[in-house]
Image (cartoon, rainbow, N blue to C red; front, side, top):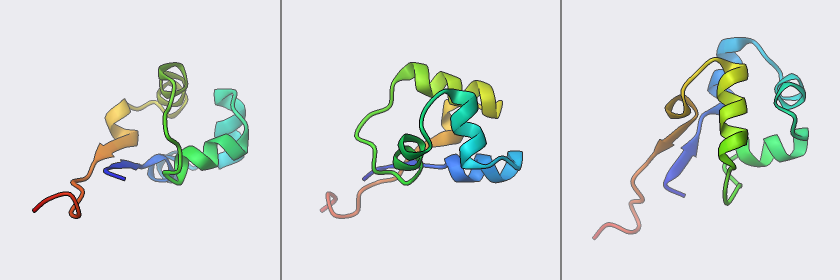
Amino acid sequence: MPIAVDIDVMLARRKMSVGELADRVGITPANLAVLKNGRAKAVRFATLAALCEVLECQPGDLLRWEPDDAAGG
């Protein structure tokens, strides 16, 4: 997938566990793991905003675009 998720990077910088982040954001640890591991098909803006608020970061700190080599010629 061309969108990479860097939640684990921000968790390490903030010295926070997945469980603590899930509690503070208000989502289940399982749903956070799906998002963190790049398996999510979508993310609600409200969830993204809550992640940014708790982690004190910008959306671009959590998500980045990587070109898909297979799609290029």
